[in-house]
Image (cartoon, rainbow, N blue to C red; front, side, top):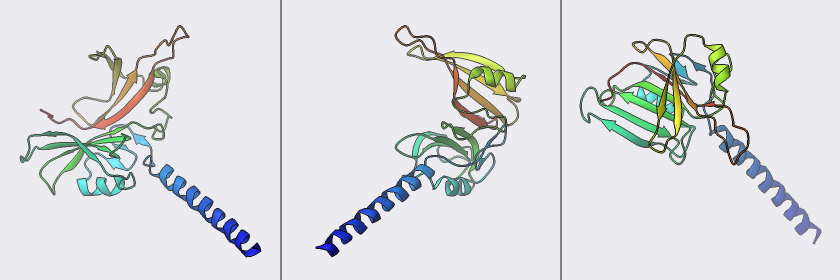
Amino acid sequence: MRRAVLGLIALAASLACLSVSTAEATKQAEFLRGPIVPGKSVGPLRLGMSEQAARRALRKLDPGSRLVKRIRKGTATEYLEYTYPYDYTSYTVGYLGRPGKRRVVFAMSHVDENKTREGVGVSALEVKLARTYRGLRCQNFYGVTSNRRKECLLGSPNRPHTIFVVGAGETVMGRPSRPPRIIRVLVEQPFKRF
């Protein structure tokens, strides 16, 4: 009887350790480590890197990817855009070129963990963005469902640059308005999408 009880305790402890290590592995796979370097990279995703190298870096975000856009199929200027991982979006990556020669031309982060050296990234306040980067050029956009957003360009649109997408602050059921925050950060090089 005592052996059976000890065996059950050992089994419960093993299952607890297994669930903790699985949770840690899942947590590590939710985002890619590394800072955002304006005009250059989002974590390990660098502009100009090969598609194979980018996919190796993104392999940590199982279960795979989802193709969301394909333009000019079969040409030297074919553009493919994928979201990673498949079931929810943490990153969006755009590749340009023929199979085997494609390069990263677009990388977007939707997660809080990737930030610039100054601490600006997803969920940072718009006020912090404006104080940190003085030379921003911002433009308002209004969606079909009247979702308002602002896109702030850091750098020249003719060279590799960074765009901070700011969501509008909102008032919920008469409560004080929430201040506008960054909802996405993208790094891209100029290229023709259409």
